[in-house]
Amino acid sequence: MAKLTFLGAAGCVTGSKYIVEANGKRLLVDCGLFQGSHELSDRNYQPLNVDPKTVDYAVLTHAHLDHTGWLPRLVGDGYRGPIFANAATIELTGILLKDSAHLQEEDALHAQKGKYSRHAEPRALYTPEDIDPVLKQLREMPRSGGFEIAPGFQVVSYDAGHILGSSSLELTITENGKKTVVVFSGDVGRYDQPILKDPTTPPRADALLCESTYGDRDHPSGSPMDTLADVVNRVAKRGGSIVIPAFAIGRTQTLMYFLRQLEDSQRIPRIPVYIDSPMALDATELYLKHREDHDLEFSREESGGKGDPLNVHEFHLTRTADESKQINNVTTPCIIISASGMATGGRVLHHLAQRLPDPRNAVLLAGFQAEGSRGRALQEGAKLLHMYGQEVPVKAEIVELHQLSAHAGKSELLRWLNGFAAPPKQTWLVHGEPPAAQSLQAAIQSQMRWNVSVARYLDTVDLSS
Image 1 (cartoon, rainbow, N blue to C red):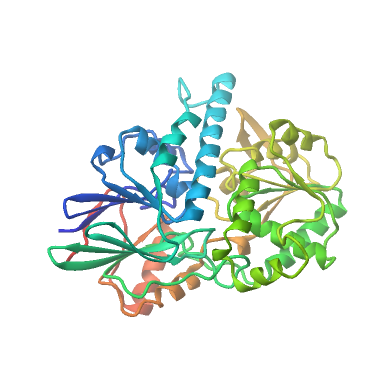
Image 2: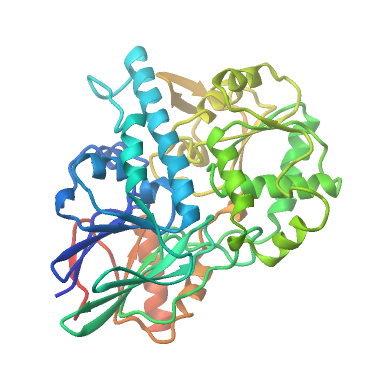
């Protein structure tokens, strides 16, 4: 009997991990970090509820850390099997894991020195030395089409339109002569967005796991370029700077694309743009390399003779810590794009600490902010932000730019679900906070009459019924 256990992204947005058991084997789909509140992040330090030594195979939907960031612990705790992913996801995962290890080691060191941790002995979840063993276990699978992970486990990948390499996975389990099709949506992206192709719905599913990050709301209508232009012009006019906490993969590239478009059309002044994230710079190179994911419009622009469509005119790349610190000396209007996207760590914290107290400045929140994150605190109107053991006053303007989210909104999720030829026998909603998942559940039940449940953490369900 095929069964599945929700080891993460159930009742919350992060920590995606699902164990499929069939044919006497165990397949792990995604292996992500929990992010956000202390309660969630503490789960990262707990042993997996399934012994990693007993897991036979792993497969990834995409490279974001909430889908890959626990792999070093999985391997460190004894997993020795292959980790299957497409070429772009493998390259991005290597970049993300190395950066994650470095940041965790750095944050633990800061906490030890500043003595501001909740823990008596702050420690990194893993270190840079833990990454190479993971990379050696990564195995390439096709970007599209069928692939046999092992006898009885066949996967077909479909474009998810979320980030480079992102996929929805159609897993066909063959057990005792019976086939069961299980679809993992991964993170479903947006329709009609720049750079990447639209999401594609697999044709059928017996069982479906669908993300529900924005299951309770749609993204605001209107052009993100209009909003971005308004913010840049307003802040530059008053002599301020704009700090954008941005995911290094996906969000940063979209922002670069829009800023270049606005500059070329002379809708914003040409002010310095600092990309203060080595990982974002590496990821941008991969976005230009993996043309198999590009939509037609972006492909036309690449070949149109204007050069790199992601390269703004006053472009400053900062790789080293010293180069990052020198941005502190910039007192004229500028734009600083830096990770992490929810301000949970990374270089962006230094920029926020310096620029939040000045009312001329602005912080642009350009994506989902998980519960418990600093980005969520800013979104909810916090007057003080806790960083590096200090309370930083929030006097800068806080602007939300939901149009740039890489996650499908409620209507887009319903559009994706309507792409199935027939209703799945059972649908579970994952990767969403409870209000979002419950809202999407109600919409699916009322509009589509599907059998749909909200997944619960650590529950095991029967896939073959």
